[in-house]
Length: 157
Image (cartoon, rainbow, N blue to C red; front, side):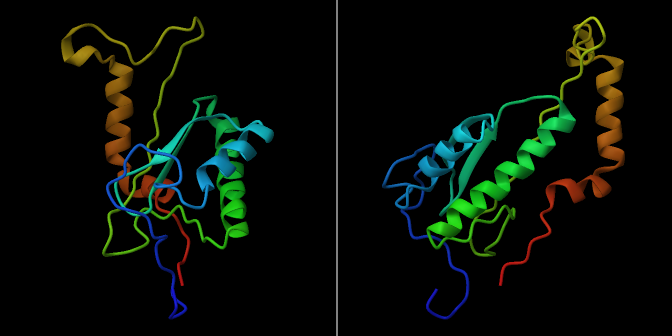
């Protein structure tokens, strides 16, 4: 902004699940997607979200260890592309207290050595196996520590 503080990019609100010049006047989504293709980063989808100016990028699933590296590289690449446009791109969940926030989605799947889904169970208990219930219990038991994964440690000046 004119006062030296960060301010959101000016776009119309409530343009959700869109791309193009109305929702993304700087062409940031297109540039990030083009760079992701060049870098062979597995982006599955990209679009605007509910509040001004939220973007969502969904990366394809993959083995956890290698995929985490791809996510970190993608985030750094996206931020560098934004900087070339004079935009500070943050992955903070809620960088502005007066605007809506964003979330992080992490989908988990596990397969045994034969390739069977270990979360799938009998029709009872919502079709969840004991392993699935134990994983859910572990996530609930450790939710405070796990917030370190989805709570960005980035300062906005």
